[in-house]
Image (tube, rainbow over all chains, first blue to last red; front, side):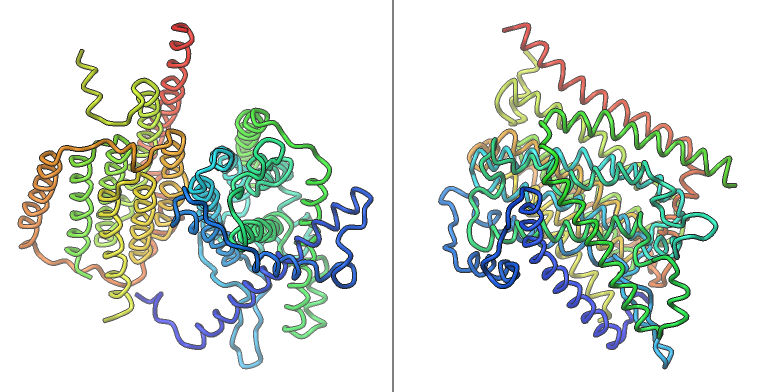
Length: 355
Length: 99
Length: 172
């Protein structure tokens, strides 16, 4: 099997890349908690966290420290193994998705060797993301069930049915995009969106606005974020599926949520907003050395991701929560037919107009 | 890797599935064992597809998955209905259908 | 031993032990988790045989959708080890014997068959491009029929779920 004949340099390169991405997404997730509180404060005309450090910048560290030193309680009547497995799975699936996201263009060094800013360029990148996302629901389900608490159970059942319902519309909206790109590899999809203007807008957002809208709504639902945060709505279910959790296990659930937010923003940017591409990138590529150019690309990508995350946060603090039947009606009766319609229109356009 | 290894592996999985269906009385576990048997067949299909370098067998795996998914949708609905009626998932209770 | 062989044996042992876990564990939730692990092992085998697309579809369809439904139903009914139906020792014994007998018979029949080696060269028949071409040219009619099957299963599930409610309302 040729796939497995790999050399040490390759392994070291990948391990370094994985470490950087993992630490990076953990660090960003940490500061997302801070950003969320600041955004909430701004929207509600408050100051927000301001005590720990300047602008409250040390607040995430203080929160993390607090969670670490809290007493760890495992409820007496819970299923112990699954109770521990729940948050672990949530964290695992949150971190796994970032493996196929291309973070920047290849760096060609002077001696001809190429450094790829992507952990794994597999030909079925999008399907990999789908697989991991569909596994993400297990963390919530198992944790909620193992807690042996009515509210947790209700919440985990809600989470599961919500995730299954919205996965369908998500997949269907993506099919239209894939029909345009003709590839499942994320790297290829990004490279097709090279630059910004090439006689037409290259970014998929301009080719598939409806698909993007459906995908975005489904992303909100998959992330369990407001206005679709029914699995953890305080007014009905106390705290939702992590009701019985304490200490760092609770921290894992909360953290996984923010990592998911970060990674899914990265996926949205990759699919619809050109990933690391930006206008006039060819001129910049001509002027700067390859490494500097790659760094600029990565920074642009991160900026886009942060804009996307801010959008998610604004929505959260603006819109009220859906009712559960409204959520299901939106998913099954509006989004899925709309996605199917989008798919048919795209297919017809490819067949008759762009051929 | 000899094709025999894959044959024996999927045979063993299939027989574990059969044992499960015969041993257990919980309808859901019986159902899961049927899924296991279908998967054992899928594994063998993929091994043969690799051996003959032919994609048809992999297409058949798709169709098996389709059938499995359809079966699960209907089967689980039946099990839920059964539970609502008799408050148990014991398949022996289905004997009552005779009366 | 090459990396390929190590992976093969690891996945084989994992698949078999998890499959045994499915039928031996008392708690249905544990059975579901063992079955998911079995599916992962089988997907690993698919990757080893260069069928990446099937591997990921296997995970999406089985682990991501079907098993979630199973878990969902088990949680809704609140099944656990206590509600597990008690089984007859004799029936259990008979099940093991008949399953084992089948295994031995087929094993004996296949033992002497000629040995075909699976080449370990990368092939591209498992790629989505080739599979799609085969599916939509050679197998397009079965594909359409299976979509009808899906639709009828969906309607069937809805009808089974609905009917009971109407009947119980009438009774009340």
